[in-house]
Amino acid sequence: MASAANANLNAVRETMDVLLEISRLLNTGLDMESLSICVRLCEQGINPEALSAVIKELRKTSESLKASENSTS
Image (cartoon, rainbow, N blue to C red; front, top):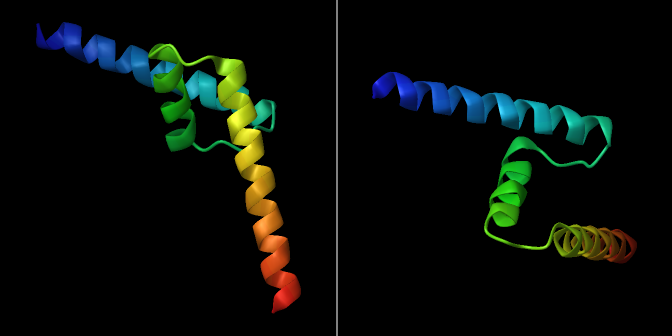
């Protein structure tokens, strides 16, 4: 039973490593934690395209806030 759990854990790690490498090749800017959260959300039924749109919008907003902070400083 423990060996089955270990095999499953190894498979999950390997899958996440592959997904992280694909993410890096596509220059998504997602780290392992962010990618893991996205995968879990998709597994729960979140639409991947909608998730992508939200991430892009959050990045735009973050960049705008940083730019406005730099211009006022």
